[in-house]
Image (cartoon, rainbow, N blue to C red; front, side, top):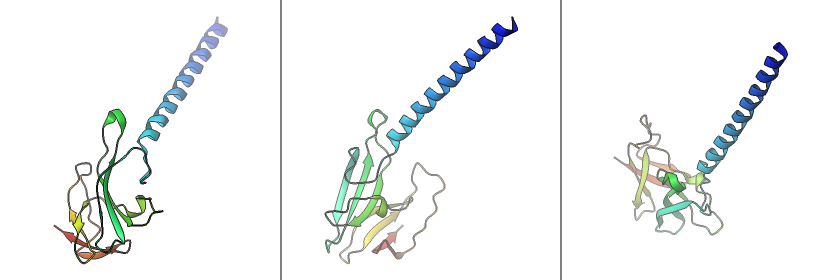
Length: 141
């Protein structure tokens, strides 16, 4: 009798382990779907606006990702060099708590502080007039 109970418990454990492995792989697939590459050639990239600096050296993008049935991601801002072969938006990603407003005629990027809805404890890293990735920026309140 004990032998049959051990066999039954063993089969149940194997089934539970199999279900756990299946659930884990499904979660990995969902996580991979949400992991997006910040690049101009990303198929799910939705560019909301873009603008080139007055001297044509840099370009900023305001964009989000299309997550299919889950809707759109939060909005991101990135500023990169305006070259044909550069498409990596991650290098120029503006820190959380700031959003790009526009270029001024001195080739400075105007940023505005803001409190994002997705983050309650935003800390501001940039102050006044400074540089970010070689680009002069001006912070407004």
